Length: 489
Image (cartoon, rainbow, N blue to C red; front, side, top):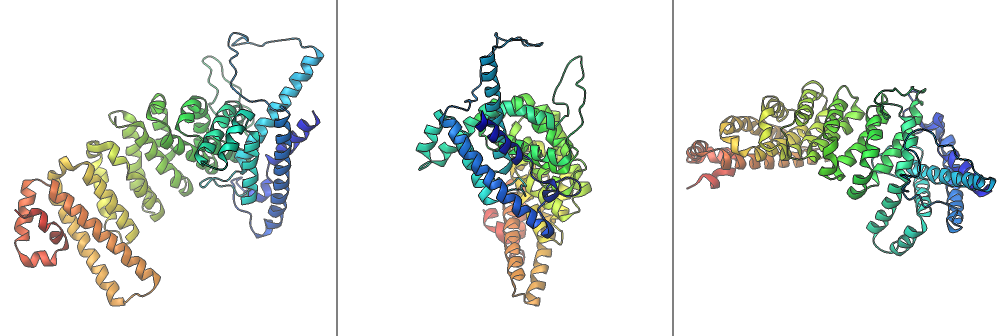
């Protein structure tokens, strides 16, 4: 009993990093500044020592069978589904029940410690270090029940994939019980009753919700497609609550978790939640800050792609329409524009010919960005334009001549920029990087020209053939030179 209490105390202390050191004035996580480094170093050392001590206690308790396996128990039929169960316990049974409660509390708190400190490549975690992350991973191995630990010991020398599968099985068994903690942290439309309303409790502060959002996102991101299909109905309401949170920092954690679900879960598992996912994806794009936009746009596109090729429903049009609306109003900023162009590329493979519905807004944006002074934007826009032409090729005869004329303008600008750079004789790293971008842009232009030549229709090909008959034009026009071999009889 004393070991359980000591372990619970250590876990409880670890679950609350000092807010004054790791958050800004709004409560959002941030890296400690110079004045806070001494406090941060002190916390890192204390947390590392506590995590290692907690791991040793958990190992001892696990070996002595002092921790529950946390396997799902089927109690249906033994307890009422509604109401309150009152049961009188003997002193021995009460002592065992209390010990069991301490065991479960230790198990769940330890899992939350792992979810708070273990490293993740995309989740902002200023309160951890590499050593602390490795210690939390060791704690996770100690928490794995004996049946799975035997597998883990055999795998430590070999396939890391099987080790990850072992951890996934354990997290799946624990996550349903941990969701009650997240539901209390995100007191927002998680409980649903038909005829009664849940009294709203005081909402936790922003930093507390950020810690919970990070824990939930980490746990979700550890699961593969098989495990996500099992826990998705229970975990999705909590994930969506983080996405709808009023704090941008909490929204980022929720969007990272939602993107992982969209990319990893199977389409049949997502189908029952299609409408809800599409609505949240569209709403997350509206009025978000730049930091949230860098996650919200890829997440919305990942949800759109993961649902499947059935684009007739209103959900696909809602998400795509909002993406275009945000591009028109917000993408005058370079950072937002580049995120939008990178996120939208895989969408056209899913939309296919349905992309034509959005041509009136999509093509003016792409063609204007292809003529931007910023070369990174030009290259990304040309890549997206190539994807659009590839997946709408049956309708290209109606647009080939216009697109060819626009590509000519882009080609002339590119040649003028190349000539000016050559005259200035750049020899630094920026000049070499600029040359690499120009070469990639030239390759994209030639690829689009070849695609237009192949799918532009007989009239368009005849016009190109006539233009290629003039030798001077072919030599001067790089695009005609690229398609000259395709239009010859």
